[in-house]
Amino acid sequence: MSILTRIQKITISLIIAYVFWEIAIWVWAKSLTVSGPVIRVDLLIIYPVILTFIIISLYQYFKK
Image 1 (cartoon, rainbow, N blue to C red):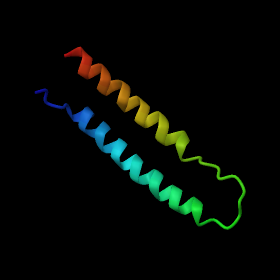
Image 2: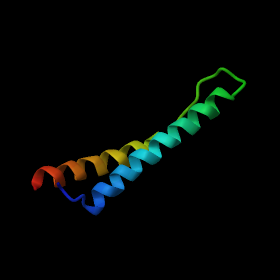
Image 3: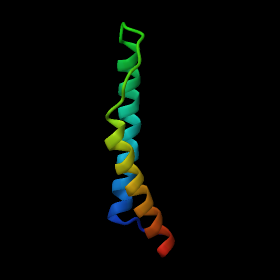
């Protein structure tokens, strides 16, 4: 069994936190009264950070 590195543990934590974040945003978006577009500026920060951690984690995993 492979032991996870610190970066891989952080990546898993970020993905779990992102799932909860999306659920919270989904509930928030449903409560809006106006049916206009919801602009998600938060994704400009969240996606690159998670993608960077996933790439680093995969590199570490396959490097072993």
